[in-house]
Length: 457
Image 1 (cartoon, rainbow, N blue to C red):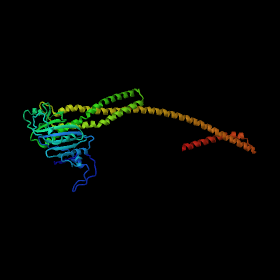
Image 2: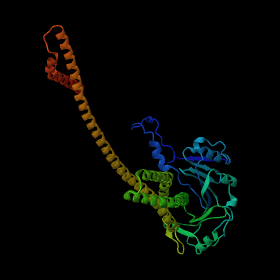
Image 3: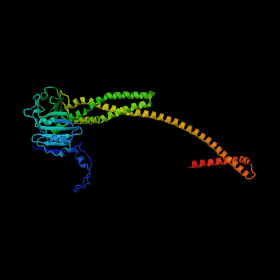
Image 4: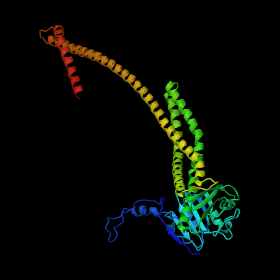
């Protein structure tokens, strides 16, 4: 079976600058930036399909965590005639395979991959038929769908029928498609077409959607309607992935807030030691930082997906159908509380982290003040010790001068006695006694010069 490939750039593709591209022959411009073409062609990424009425669309979105592009390429190669699909075909994160009577589109996003099969509506399926079985006439092997690598996050069987929207009893016939149960429905494009669903997963694992459009609707417009409806449902489910995490965090945040209040009270009343408070506060801060690291991406992604849901709903340009609730209105009534819960939890987590930081700063200030007081006391003790040491040193120096002078005078006495013995008329004791003031001054002066030299060095 022959097929052709449609490839486009993707926001998920790596935008790593390489070398500057050489100037084009005959170009009037400087050389292109390495990202110019990639960024310019981004507007053409993932173009809408051209779908001819009537048609059946089987859509599956799977989480691709742990699933590589190579694994998805190998799965795509299992399709008839695609055994030689080149590796380059999946590098742009968008691939459309066209076969004789159907089209398969593959898209890889940051967190999920999408597979969209567009084929003719099975024979004998028409508006008014009760709960038609649409998946028994798949043009591809059901086992291929079942073995798509990843975990299913969204699955939709969407039928597009060409009908006259002005015919009477149209809503009753459409409700029969859903077994006569109530549906959520809107006029799209300011009344151009109808879309309806129940937002329920059937026994086969698929949600069922129905689009009614005039026979003259162009193929590009049908493709845009199809793309917006499937993106609304996919982004809605991806946005809601933050809700279980927010609910799981609520008890932890409550316990952390109570513990922080207790720490703050003990800090105010000085009823616990700084060391004990610091240990408790560090443990609490670690828990908060861990929770932040584990959930910050999910909460940010939830906000981004919720924004896309609002944008896609606005693009549908819905008009209510009498007796039914609009798709966007139904979805917002269910989605808004969940998004508010996620936003409040994210804000609560960020606020708790800031409060822990402020409490840490208070405790650190108290510890710093206590440390400064201890340092001041220690300096006072050191100064007092140095003063005592200086006094002791002065006393020792005085005694040293007296001792040195004593020894010098004794030497003078012995010298005088030696001279007297040699016949010199001298009184050794009197001469030594007269020399005592001079000896004391000389020794003191020598000591001062030694001090001066030491201070000079």
